[in-house]
Image 1 (tube, helix red, strand yellow):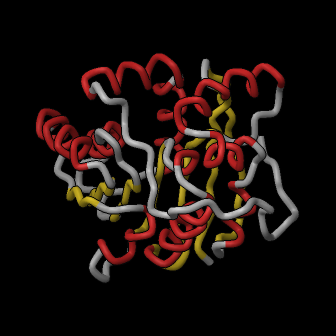
Image 2 (cartoon, one colour):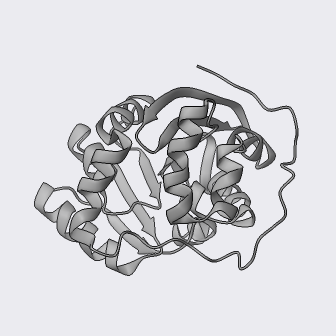
Length: 230
């Protein structure tokens, strides 16, 4: 399933501060099971991994890696891939370190925001960058800054793949997404619900932007977006 947006800019006022982020669920032990239950996580992560198509020798970055569930999936799927995870929440990164160690997956983990991505790579260029359930949580300026940083951090013809709440197309999905909005805030989440991501990706310089899959969940619809650095 593919959609397109024709406007180059998304008409939302820029909220402040731009470095705000929504922390993970306070009881970290419940974070992973709640995500699994409410978002059909296995379904969209399986599709995201297939779209990512990781190859040995590639450098792949997970921006907003959370507890490193997807980094672990990539590392177990393709040994020999170089993995980097970035997240602003130190509590989450501690949990991610323990999870990856238990999986036997090696990955660099760095504390930082989406916009810090290029600097945290220390001059390295990523072949692919992925992000899951992050962009709906941050202000519009941070969405733009994060996508610009992803574009800057990618090698030519590198790919970005994003799984996140996107355009809520039906009354049922819009009603269910209210659950997320009540938790994460209406100001940051509404642009996603209105379908802002494809236009923002093009604005950041990505080409061949497409919404490739849409998953109906108990908290609204989650889309997979892809784009390429020209």
